[in-house]
Image: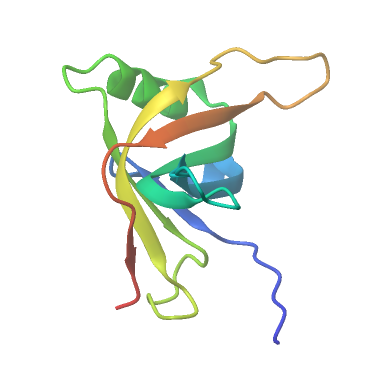
Length: 137
């Protein structure tokens, strides 16, 4: 298996490329596990239910662009935005570089996280509203 060091992911939130303000991005998919054990079953039985997904990004604060953009999303009439993530920016979508995209709502934003001698940074938490799409072409 080929190993690769990723250094240039592409992260777009609400149409704005925030990649150059991020140091990490993650997308987590989940599916409900529902117990369906009946009388007489010797072991617990489960069925899978609804799927869900969340995303997070480690973001360096920039009040003129990042804060302004996030505040606009959070305070809009419909507080959601399109999110798209490519593992490698500038490389065409493919099986080796799939684009993950969907609509998110920002669930946690910490506009102020400042320590003496440190670069202001925060974790942006988002929850998917609807399907997480994957495109390879």
